[in-house]
Length: 130
Image 1 (cartoon, rainbow, N blue to C red):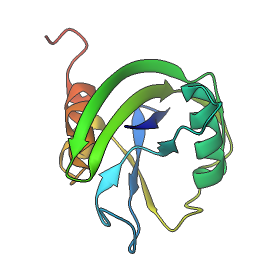
Image 2 (image 1 turned 180 degrees about the horizontal axis):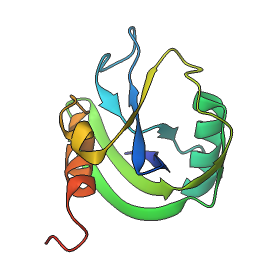
Image 3 (image 1 turned 30 degrees about the vertical axis):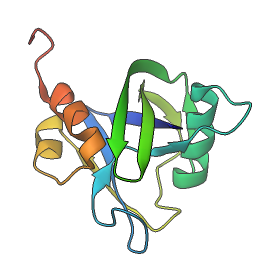
């Protein structure tokens, strides 16, 4: 099982979506930025490192939100999602990916990775929704 972390970055009520670049698995689909947890890292440390590598930002105080297990045809992934409301720098696409600030409703209209779709739905629900 691969452990992956993802950050839901917020700015002015918008969250950052990342479009996977050509040449990568699932090219053209959207996801939340992040990556694999390396040996010796805790998930929050891994996320800070991944956001630095992928977007050139320094995330401060990632707040754990939820975790899920997702089975792809090639294997099982454990995903840990964090909210990030405080970061230094302006996100830049350092790995050829597309970036877009989205309302949760706009995110629902984009083709997100299968593992992220229920996360997008949860973000779009009013706070008091079941």
